[in-house]
Image (cartoon, rainbow, N blue to C red; front, side):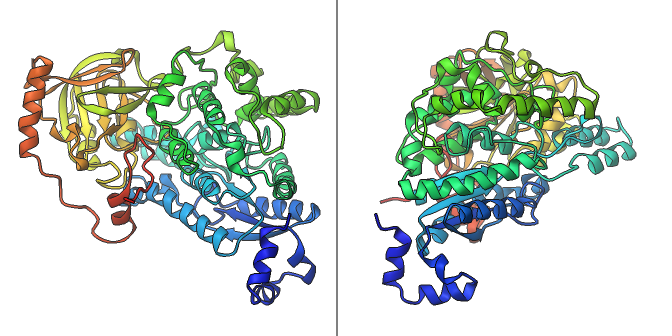
Length: 582
């Protein structure tokens, strides 16, 4: 079989001299050519260290007889954008990075690819790009940062900030938290979107077994990058593509792992978008179906006790998969060229778990702890919960659905009827929460923050202000057509669809409407008007009257990438990818 790169050389006589001018050697031109795509850059800790993984992968490619070409498309940091309009660019950046990967790979075709990333949008963007390009490829995940003193991790900073705003702590304590929350490179050390998507890459079969979410400073991570480089050449020569690996069965495996780890709700935006590139349709109902009855096992922050670096010490994705093995499709193909079941069996024989135990022993000594593996990853029959970690709520308020991470929600909000307090931006809502204009029993709405409204930013500061308030955190709910950080906790419901800008019912909610939340029965509905209960038929008539008066807000962005995104973004329940009419 003639490699694509060699066919291209025959068609484009300028290619050889241009590559020689770039630094390639004559003999490199005839080797399998591997695209090394990464989000390396000085944008944030999750990408600042990826150059050393790029070089490790490049070395592995060379030693396997290939040539690795380095391409870069740096991602942005949600954390650095929080509280500003910069966060509105976050989800749109996923699409733009995927687009650049498509351009890089197709303008000058390659025989295979290595994709290297760590964080919230870089990870799903690279996976979307990998599917779209669909050349033999492998993912290298950039790992997680270390915890700070007192096991401080970044998701706690919103709590410190809200406490300082309320006068509960001094500026010195807030500054201490700021200066110690990010002590190393890597993704933030909790099961937020970055960590979740690293885990999803391995769960889908696209990363080497045991390689997801290692401590970013670990030498093992560099070894995995090197091995991934070698494996990319084997995949290129064997012709094993992402479409041979990512199937409905492997996606179901990933969702079962998502349930077991209490993964980020943003995964409901990313997995459907990844699947969409291969023509596989999954939606929020797929998540809801698979989460029902699923065992939640991982005791890591934000819902649990420990920082994310402890994930690897307890055995990582393979250890999770062993606990839920009976629920997985073990015959799916992976980037090793072997099935998932074969990979799991091989890890038990090659010393993987013994290596993880040595790391756990070292961490216990470093942090003065006495943890065993089961303190971090619970046994299946000793699960933290047995109903997964997310639920999809529907009703006349969210006909297409809304998502709640119920493992991070107080039980008091599982059944509630609350008074509506709608706000048309996060800034208005956050000010009301911080200055005590929100009361117990309120259903606080933030709307016009969906993909078409403002790019679908995170409502992180508002959710933290609520969840860190001992009274409000158990007595109100926050409902939005925007999204939440993977670190968010508390009574928060996001992705409410259709969104307000598209004329969804969330745009029609008025002050004093009664809002029912019923997590076990998956209900989110308007059940009363001006504080009085009404029948479903009466509610229907009232909403119809309101709809006649409804006019969407003027377009927030009239030029640039956010106009493109707002015009073409699909519903959050489909993945908020860009869709175009045929």
